[in-house]
Image (cartoon, rainbow, N blue to C red):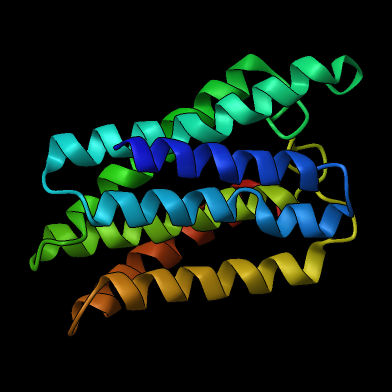
Length: 187
């Protein structure tokens, strides 16, 4: 538990430092590094409660680091946190949910396929937010690479979390969620 918190803090410090570097590099790092950490701790948890706790602690670590940096640099308040407290809270809840979904992917039934598909689909939704102008996470001049990164990440999640024919069902669910978000965004 403590390891997931400290790993989250270290990833958050690195993310805060990268936020002052080139925007495409920061766009690749955030939120994907945090998501990867949370999926790992959620998937390796011993039970539902532990997955929830580990996911919350792993999501809380980067939040603490980014808030600390925003206090030290008042002119860039909430840089990397979505720009407002509401977006920050939504990001925290979403990241904690990823840990629980990753835990449920351990099941060998349709519920595990559903959890894997929803997890991969939500990762795609988070990734697509970087491509939409006007969104807090928008990264200029990042268009073709973000789509490729989101696609590879979605495929990698589905293939690594599901075995047998379950990856097809999970992939279909992820594709439906990503497509619905893409259409709702007005593309």
